[in-house]
Length: 246
Image 1 (tube, rainbow, N blue to C red):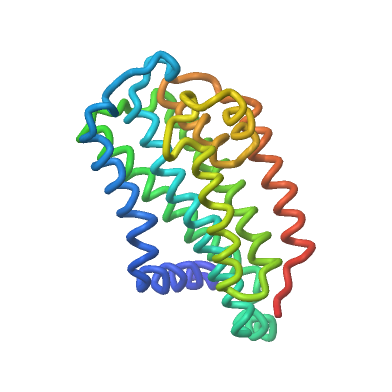
Image 2 (image 1 turned 180 degrees about the vertical axis):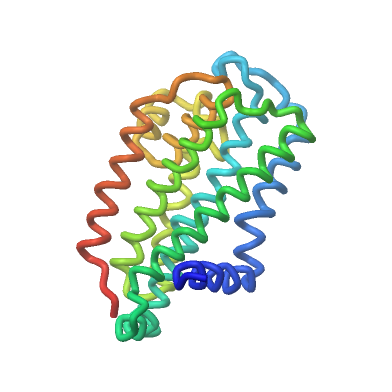
């Protein structure tokens, strides 16, 4: 077994020991879908949604919630805590470079998101007849791009925050307005035009648009793809520049 595989499995084990992480990334999205799916108005089909029901678009919003929790709150706090406690500095003195630990953390979080996606769409389809995405590859692309944007922001927070608690606090501060603009409280299509346009340039709203498009088989929105790649490039480059191992 390679060192990278061992590190990734170790990160999984450490994460699974945190019941709050498991709840909010895997169970809470399912709970949200289950509760909302039983609300009568969620079965309505507003004309703004292009033939989709409200509950159909909330499947993507629930998954976006898990991505947001991981990218803006969980991962930055963990990495900043590793640096704060000197874990990254100690890794730097061994053949296992600190970058390998970061890669293991990213891999573990991406795998968690993919498991959450399977659970969310399976439950939504079986319980509330949410359609299976007509374009699974587009859905996978949307998830990967959404993760890339969110994780790049998370790495930047981890790079700049002096402590794990500070990283979590900043991530929480960003989390709620970004989730609002992504349509967690009300579908984006039902928002005022100005809020929709602002949301177009946030990572989770762009990811939500791509996931909704995958449900109906629409071609990916190039604006959404560009926005997410922009977050990856800009925030990722800034994270590399400012990240400190100790």
